[in-house]
Image (cartoon, rainbow, N blue to C red; front, side, top):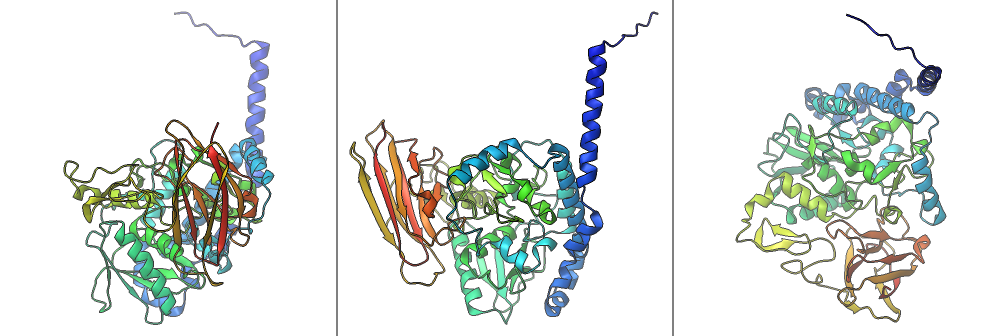
Length: 518
């Protein structure tokens, strides 16, 4: 048998040397920028030590059973691995794709506040608890932490995921409804906003919530007022804490933390998130790198729903920033202010209804035939749960209440909306719904003429306008709330554009100009 040995050409030798040099430079870059594990562990700290003595004693058995005592070490290891992976991909900390998007964001100017005083991650950072929690506000069990650690080492699995479906599923679900109670010392306003959030989740799902005033339920959420806003992920068994501390007593925050307790991960943890947002990690606080962990099909599921920038489970654009500059940039920059919402979105409702099999309660043959992406209400199958901007029994009408149907013409016309009252922020939003319609086959052009000053927070957590010129009407539309949005022009994907104004603060004025698009 003859053996032939190929002699490499000079070109192949040079190419091989170049590849080795590149590899060595990458390894060197990672080594230089690698995070020290001991440093991370020290910064992460022990979550239990940050609780009051009363709370840590009350829940010590639960903390030991669920592995919270070792969570700090797992988070430090996770953050170190994520950082080192990123440095291997981008050794100079720059991503050209992100830079191009950032230029577009910066071109609009910046009249919004830096971040939002109402954001969970900012509150938890100020209270020095965010670093001790997964993605700033989640208490993970040891099993969940192990599964997420494994997922950070995987590159496959292109499934789109968000709701918790791990090895413990369906034990992580509240199959007999959700019992909750309050620590006796809980403030009345904390109780009020939690109950309002409970009502929203209950009215949009088949999940029953019970206030366990007699403290008889074996499994229950106990609302406490520790430092920060945080919750376990899903049901863990026995009495589990959910904190709405100082600054967290808002309905939007309570909706978010209840979402975690029901089993929802953050929206930006979806595996397909890189198709919708990019991270400017040169702005990221390296001690919070777990913010950017993506889940896999083994531990979560979003039931095929599209990515929703306006989900109440989505953090805002400056989340976990070290300099108050954006850490997340939307590919479609018109969605930049939509991230960080305090409004329960249609997709949030739909995912939980899928996760808890609420939709199975309605027969396809006899249930309401919902329009515009709605689905039969599990508590009344003859009516529908509708996307924002749609109402009526079948989601084929403008929602009841303030607003109007406006006819777009060739000439420019104006829509002027005034909404809100007083100088103090209210607990819940007031909404007005408009439909701007063009003749069949024509699109609508809308220009933002002016928005009142003082509402410019990421996520538009005090008020603003949502313009649903986007193609998929099930997801949240583009939200705007700052002076920098003036002169923004949108063209619809159909002959109808739902426009929703919303406010929970003093009077705001929204002025839009609209016409048939040509």
